[in-house]
Image (cartoon, rainbow, N blue to C red; front, side, top):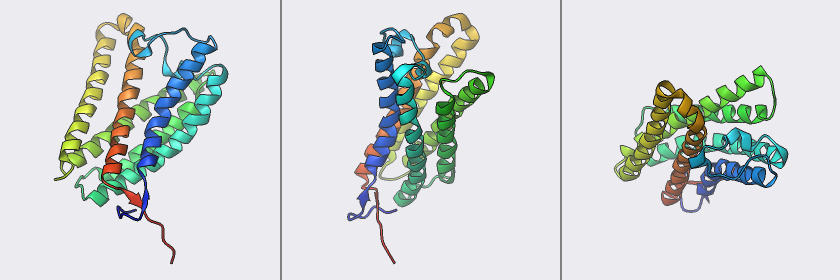
Length: 226
């Protein structure tokens, strides 16, 4: 991988990896409303439905699985290339070698969660819980490492700082959810779905930002034959 001008642009792959999960959950949400499986609401505010529920019934079941599994594969490529991208930029980060592995486990967890969605049983429930926790937490750590690496770069430090602010916002949302769970569990149980939607949005927003930076830095792939 390189950033030469005659290479193949890679930013579109990053954008696809970022937008596919985001578009999927909103599509399955809309389809579930149209088919009568859930009621109309604003999930980011009303906390009316979980992300999982949007992909459990009817046509949404097939849309969710048919797009989230490719999204997991795109995610694995995205995280592998992020490690290469930071290396090409010359970003010094001790955590850079961990980024592809964190992303790999996160995306495998997303795939496991997707496969278990819509099935009943303790094993499936446990798989979904572990999958979603690993996906969110490991993705967040990988994004934190990328942001930190960019902040130390002489050219991209401003973008890195902004991405770190986005990570801090996601962390604040997560900490608030933990506090509410401990202090007012009854109230939190009524709004926990909104936290899930907000965190998913912030994580995908970070990925969209990275895709834009790939384009700005002209990150490309070059194919050659010996």
